[in-house]
Image (cartoon, rainbow, N blue to C red; front, side, top):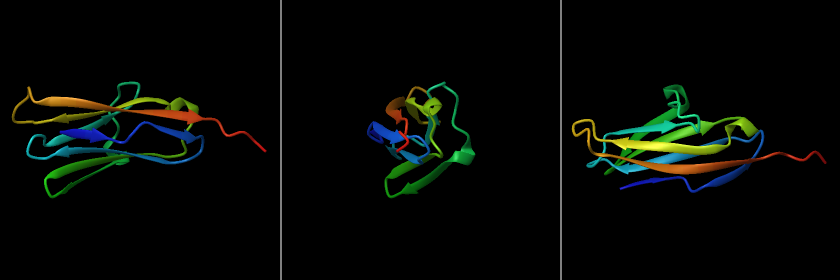
Length: 99
């Protein structure tokens, strides 16, 4: 199966790490997508294999209100194009209130 970070609320200006985890005998490719449906650039992601799992970490830095929304992780098996699933993490961005 596949799992992603639970839905999260974060204050503007903070950093957030979103993790997608998949069993690597079912899937061999993970991709994060922004709420705008654009693929997250490889420069902002870190991929690793550990045991029977594949992980993809997406780091969002200096969060702004524009970063809020539903982030999608797509898990695919490249040798079997029909084997694909998607999981979602909702990022709620809260504006910092000045003291």
